[in-house]
Length: 460
Picture 1 (cartoon, helix red, strand yellow):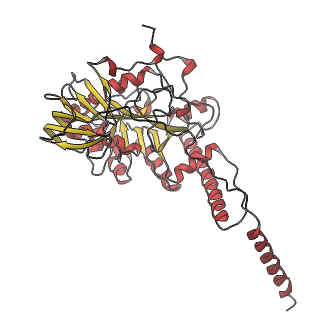
Picture 2: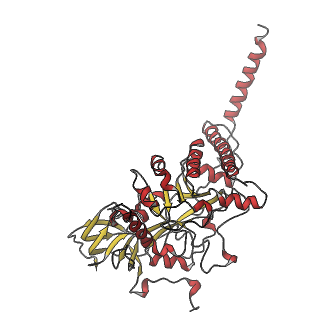
Picture 3: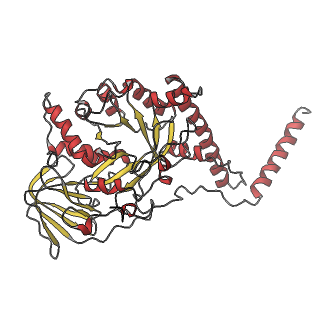
């Protein structure tokens, strides 16, 4: 009985303290604004439009000859043959082809602008192996003339990524390719952020040359793991704060950390991973890294050896963004085959994407895809235009988490549309007219729809 007395006293004291905490007035709840630089994008004025008599590639594997497409209020209203739209502007596209707007999942326009000058190369914060705190959107120069050139190539949406020098390089941003004075005016409404990560030679060679970690690929992995260990603890602290506050306690919020804010967003599934990763074994390790910390490993960019693990990528729901024939410029990019994209695409539930990572080839992503189709079919595949268009439309939209809004010509989707003068996979193909959300933003025969950068005005 004597031994029980202290315990009873402690219970009473504890109960009193708990009662005191629960009755203590709560400080204002601390919340993090997850969208402090919101999109201000407004679709340009558009008209009710019917595009008639075209060969239409829907982006969903369908090719419709002599087809019509109706645009109403910025959305695709109908796709098919013999359609009628009263009071609509008629575009006769007989002999022409129509596709969804092209999407580039890997661009550095605006952060590595043209003209290229060191003073406004703002794409890579090469000061620490982990810089998840930086956001590419804060470097975007909307006046980069490259945006206009890409639009003339049919590009309506693109993801702007930080460079690949760091293990974790920062957030990417998805933009609509419209003329704007601000980044926010281009920002794709409600598109999820991406997080740029990088495997292999780039981070280990940069920091190793400075005699800093990482110096090896095992150092790379240690760096990712340490970052996500810290992010896991950070998330746990915020989850506890939320639960305690909801229970009526006057909880103290964790100290804010910009780096860990972004990594927490990954752990909560709000931010999508985009891995610069060439080699098969490294992509497999990055998939396992995601499993270790319970996040999805997202899209592998450059993915030179994706063909070796096409089944693994499909099983894990990873997209692979690839070039047609850019390889061999460093050892980790050496083991390439020209059928890489086709081999990845051939697996059930795959997500093959063709990307640019270039201010030049972004203007010709249709012909980049054509090269792959040619090489693949010359070696036993049987790809058609209606399949290949998905590499730069539907699958790209899936990679960016915006497939419910754009990437295909389906009723209800944003009217992001390109009219091509001929088969878009011809070497003679040019985009004649480009629409974003139903508004014409480029017309190769009408100077009113040929936007020029303010930067270039008066310099010609």
